[in-house]
Length: 276
Image 1 (cartoon, helix red, strand yellow):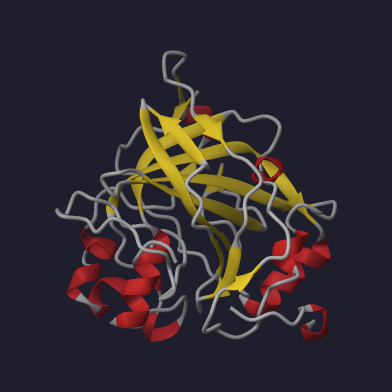
Image 2 (cartoon, one colour):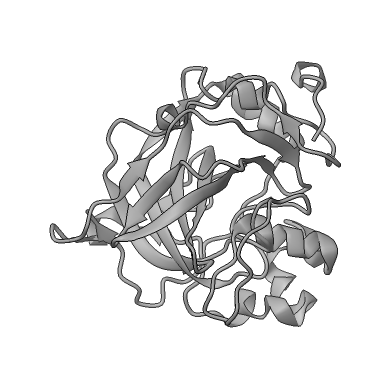
């Protein structure tokens, strides 16, 4: 499978929302423990301090003991990911719609040791949730999906990580199932690297962000955390119910690099999951 990985080398937030790196773009530093940290930031923190992984002695079951800054991974009460029982999701017609404002954008790609991450310095892409504006800073991937619907995972999951002026995070999660080749993600796939990259690799053409989302944007919303150390809570999660597709070959190319980079399901602890 190595021969299908193109020759290109390479975070955006600091220690755990999805899998970020020491090369992440600068973000607002949280001033109190209530300010969230993006997954990139989470992983960036990791590369600069205590190492963690998805298996063995430094795997998810041990994250909380690896570093005191990771305490929320074991002590937190609103952790992510979760299993979403669709029949139990509360339908709330009064909930404000998520306003997604994306446009074609230039990205650079890195392998940060935990995922493939695409970073951008653009400030034009944003989502508006409850009248609060969050700017897109990066997106990355997990396999299998971290969130589950009715106890079932998808082949992969895409996380689009956003941050507001206060440093708080909102993550848009998109499930990925095997199907047709996704030509819109192919520029990113052409830049995949098997080894950790020291520098970002600039993509030759903009990513058509709007095409990465399903046509039906019915979403589920809940309050959660980063899915990587330090597992910081008070993260707004917006999970789109309809999946997008990648071909079997595209999925296998990613899984050749990261066979499994997902955090196991966390207790719901009586949190509400709202369907718009």
